[in-house]
Image 1 (cartoon, rainbow, N blue to C red):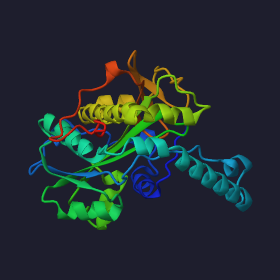
Image 2: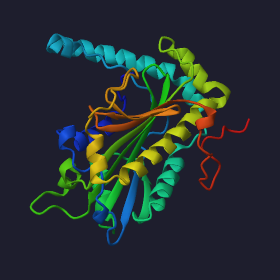
Image 3: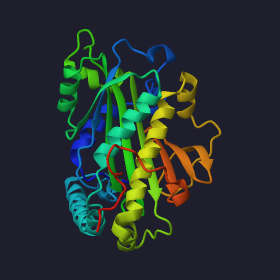
Image 4: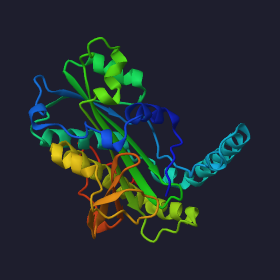
Length: 321
């Protein structure tokens, strides 16, 4: 279940945040109690750059397997391009079934509700952006009247064989003040972020067959995307649970998560890391390669969260016939 984004812009910003940071060196995956409340509160910058659900592919790694070289790099590029084109064809029925599903207000409302419920976070201006470049984030940071900006970047997609709907949330806090002697863009460097954590939700299709992606797409898309809409709602809700959990961690909690200790390595195909929790309704994994907290579960109506109250019709509601 290897995941490869087909959308390049978001990868650039995420790479800037996590590059060069080993799991052992991570120091900002929690907020110390004394730093939780800040005078002036925090503004919130929510990014949902995409307009529709995206597919993923299994990236070809012939170059790495053969030791490199231009020829093999060109082969990889050709294979990946062909896979991307095929994935774009296969996902069409799912995209069509999700017409009318509006992810953006759902993510915005859920995020604001989560941060308000913390009590100490004190969110001020909460704005939604369709741009995910570092320049756009710096512009939001400069325009903010608050001393800190919480950035919540959401994406939603399938995995490579369409057996799962995936919602990802990259959450970080940036200081408005520029570090002494540094350039303004240094505020987005990992070492200068007061808080930084990647969170993901994988909702698996019941009875999915990895060898028949077209059948998986058909199942997600049935009844005007009933299961896909529910899985996306669940994904947003799960990311809120993980965000609140992460923001509530103590230093000891955060440090413990980064260490395997005697934790069981997950045996769920496609995931590398150790289990933080394993319950009948889902498994929480710390993926040590990406420093992500990932919840994996199989869709069940019993686990579906209550319909979100966004002040308008629920995003999960199918369009009227």
